[in-house]
Length: 396
Ligand code: LMR
Image 1 (cartoon, helix red, strand yellow):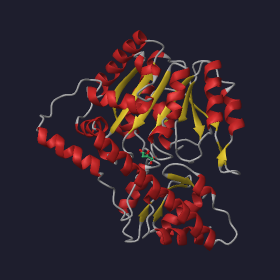
Image 2 (tube, rainbow, N blue to C red):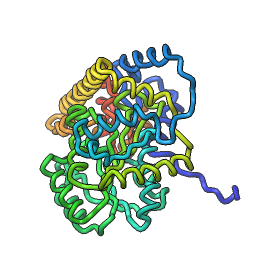
Image 3 (tube, protein in one colour):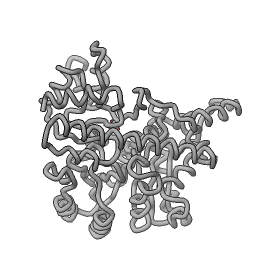
């Protein structure tokens, strides 16, 4: 058996972190993985999280099993945050939400569910998309295709290409959409374009799967959640994966959720029973600690407010880094326009650097970015920015 097993390639994102750790250059910088660092290059421990941890510790709760679908207080809070408290979908009990092991775990629950109940569907992801989307759905047994998305000339969305392809898809095609802060490009649809997408999805009876890993990193929690809300009010089924890794800086706790909006309450409860089967046969039930932290923050008004303020702080710092990166690159490469960097949303900048240039950044400067040219702007700070800009300017 083992003699025939080939070596798997390194993961295109987490593999960069592995290579980064092995690099002995003291100036090395990891702009690969999507992690927010503060201006001192540290992963922040949010104050709202610390406060919630104090309260959880004071309660002295035992480390018991959670229900298969997760902590009820957490699932409830997630529904309110993701769908909006006054959403008719919640009043009609049409949403089923389960706690998941991060956003990736949520995607996998959704993928397994779809493979079981719509086995002949094919999956469509944006070109490009998050590196793990294709692999995850392929491993769940789907054929994965792409729809046009990014237009390198405008650094924006090739909307005609995208909508034109969606209009040709057979019913029940699964369409993976980034609800905000498109990963890797940072190019999002306008409200009017989203309306068109919703219309086409409805006309052709497609299965939309909204991936929302960066709620709060574009404009704010409310505004970034709008697309999920609009979709869920106008159509079903809608599948949603969301993550608190970035917005709570709780990467290692693996806190996410998967939700389905069904046509009525009965469908939702049958769906929930099937999601629980999927979870039970994979990992039995989810871990408790991160969910308790998020549930405590979201259900305590003063901690919730503290969280939104801290999230705003992260978002504002990323915006500042975008502007500095664009300005400094323009200053070093006279006449070239890098203002597109400031128009992208979320943690990343899709820089346009080629795979060879990315390789040179690594080999000559120990600056690590994803081979597609995706730079994690959230890992830039006032101390490393000049080094990075110098390196990029030299290889351009
Ligand atoms: C990323 O895109 O870098 C993050 O979502 C982390 C990951 O799991 O890939």
